[in-house]
Image (cartoon, rainbow, N blue to C red; front, side, top):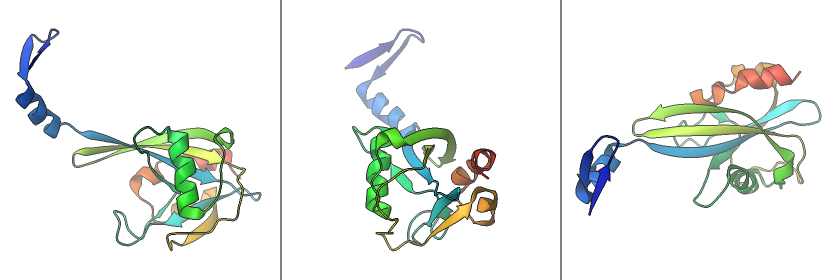
Length: 157
């Protein structure tokens, strides 16, 4: 099968498309949450040592799976990681951050949430802390999370 790219007048075979696809950067969608408690503090969790950026602090969340919206993924991840229930109407997108790792481009969307059901209870053995936004820079975090801190400092005490 051949595909004609009219704009560039290029003819590609299926084989060359597959080879081209291998060279292209994959985009990974990730949603994360700045849970904000009644004192205006933000929840951060510590990544397991056996994962990428192990031992660093991050905003809870995770990868968006096939056929999930960003909000659905975040609701699922918050239940799986810290055992809380969140409804989509309690999530508000705040900002996004991107980072590039080898052939992978990560797009992380940070939501804020002030209302949830349940007590935060780490289900994956991770540590967690409630931290004032102005103190978030004191915790070692992946670069993609660090980029989101200024917006939190701007909106929180």
